[in-house]
Image 1 (cartoon, rainbow, N blue to C red):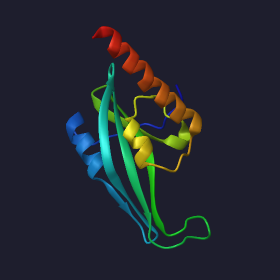
Image 2 (cartoon, rainbow, N blue to C red):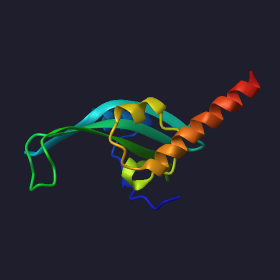
Image 3 (cartoon, rainbow, N blue to C red):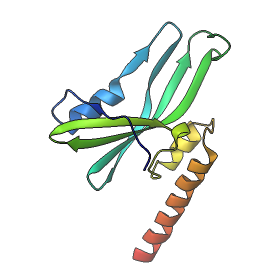
Length: 136
C-alpha cells in the first residue's frame, strides 16, 4: 500500500466524520470544490469513502487552470487509530489503494487521470460479477 498522510478528526463517530467530509466545500477566489456524489465501502477495519468531486474554476489562474467545471474521483480512507477517527485523501491521480470505486463514477469523472487504475477498477467489477454469478 502507498504511504498516505493521515489527519486526525475532531469528531467522535465515523458517521459524523463521513457527514462532515461530504458536506465540506472548499472555496477560494479562483475555485470551489465540493462533493457531487459519494459511496461508502468497507475493507475489514477500513472504511473507504469514494467521491466524485466538482472542481469549479471560477477564473483562470496563471495558465494552470482554465475557468470551467472539472470532475475527479477522490478516495478517502477512514480508520480508527487508538480511539481516534483518522482519514487520508487520495485522488485518482495518486493511484488509490482500492479498486471498488463504483463504475458510474468513472463515467461522471470523464477526464481520465489514471488509465491503469481505472483498468484495475473495471477488472475488479468484472471479477465481482463472475464471482456473484457462480454463487447464484
